[in-house]
Length: 180
Image (cartoon, rainbow, N blue to C red; front, side):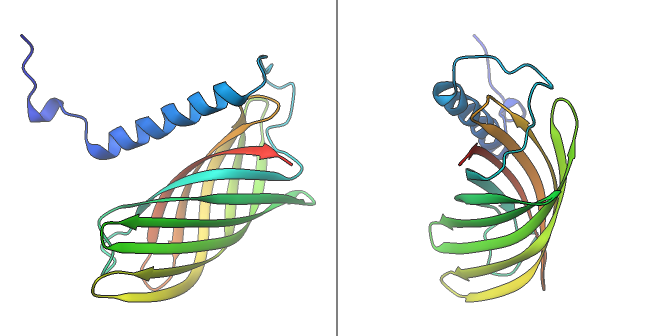
C-alpha cells in the first residue's frame, strides 16, 4: 500500500499550470491539420492572428486582491512593419472578487528556426470590484515570451508579464492563436 504524505502532493499552482499545458496541447492536436510541421519550414508568426489566452495573475500583496487570480480572454495581433501590435482583453473572478482588464502593446519578435522569442511593451487598464473595495488603474506593461508553431494553423505562446502601476502585478500567460 502506498502512503501519500503532504510533501508528495503537487501544489494547486503546479496542477493548474500542468492542466493548462495539457489542455492547450490537446486542443491544438484535435483541431490542427493532421500533418507534421518541419522545424524551420515556416515562420512562427502570422500576418494577423486571433487567440485565446489564460493568464495566471500574481498580485504581490496588492490590497483587496486575492492571492492569485486566473483570467480568460481574447487577443488580436496585427503586423506593424517589423513589429507586432497586440490588443488583449480578459476577465478574472473568484468567489467575491472580479476583475476585467485590457492591454495594448507592441511586440518585438526575435525569430529562430524553431521558435520566436519576443519582448513586449505597452499599457494596460484594470477595473476590479470586491466586497470591500472597487476601483480601476492605468499603467504600463512589460513582458517577455516565446511562441512556436503547433501546425500551419495554430501557434502556442507563453508570456511572463509585468503590469506596472501604483502596485505591480505579475502574470504568467499561455495562449493559442490562429491566423485570420
